[in-house]
Image 1 (cartoon, rainbow, N blue to C red):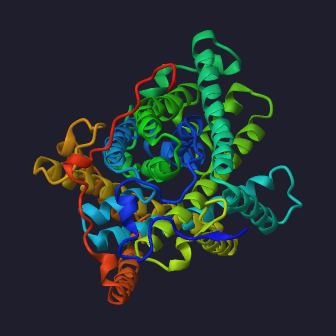
Image 2 (cartoon, helix red, strand yellow):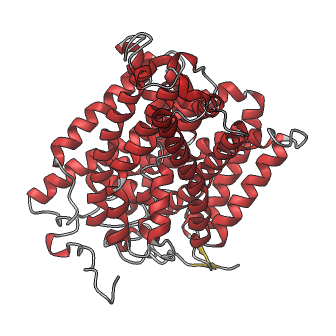
Length: 497
């Protein structure tokens, strides 16, 4: 499979020009509306809900529902801000590209490399978790063998074509969505019709009995925000698909606009139903709330069903990680902010070099998780949350600066605007600052902040070295002028429906 030259330009200093206009970046636009929608839905559902919620319920009780709702509002503000930027200039570099333009080259450099590392370490945890789930059925299979097998299969799916990646992600996400929808329907049946033995004890009153809504205090509830925000990790992934969506003008805004009902149904709705069926006092850290609910209802093979669902959730996250790391490394390389080898595409127009390098590092994580599985997972999820908070903060800060540029007549206005504008983005930024403070207050999560100065020092050194070699690659990018405004979605007619 031969390589093709980067289609966004030659010299690193000009490589981002094509992308800046939202034109051809060299990728194949193989992601259809159905796949984009499911990637967006799947990005909001992960192991954080299926497994992590058990620890959070034990820590906060029924008030955890409120935390998911509040965090969901902040996530919606972030995604609408990203949606406005995407319709201003749809590129696969997404938030890293917007950081370069509105916050400066160093901010873009830090964002691109931090987002790449976030997905690498998340992939380390997820592929190892997937291997442990396999042991539920086949304990005789060595964990490293299963982990390596999953890595190779997902790498092949990402390497062959973006359409195959989208199809794999579609079906993995479908399993998660079906499981949650089924849990909600069964739980509602238990509550309203008294189905199964659980119907004798199920009650909406569980949401305020046993100590009230905040049984362990407001402070303990606030400390669960780190777990809650980790559960929302990957909602921003839809922005990375901009360069490969068949019709980004229609599919991306539609996917973002469905976020409120996804959060309301899959997080707030599912947790509310589960906590009505099973009192919060019966949940324990490390036990999936879905397993506890299925056991109480008496569903045959409930543990096996949940094990299969969390396996698909882990594989889905790892699959998304491979996809995003390859694209982010290529974006950095194309803009002269990473090794040029990552800028090349294969004949099938996939960034194989960047994906391969990321997969190689993920495989190192298999050994790390084997050496200290419980500790490694805690550190990884905490670091991933910090990296995600940085990414989301960059999106909001870029949106605020973008709005200022539009008001000053220096940038083209987007047709898909974020409600609340810069004010809503500033409030969401304050919320993210609170999350970081709470991470620092949590003894288990605090360790993730210790590595931030070292990471920034490494990035500062790399930035200085690359800038000295190619200063043009780090020049501030010009805004799209008002006359270059991107058109809105095509009207739905017989020809375009």
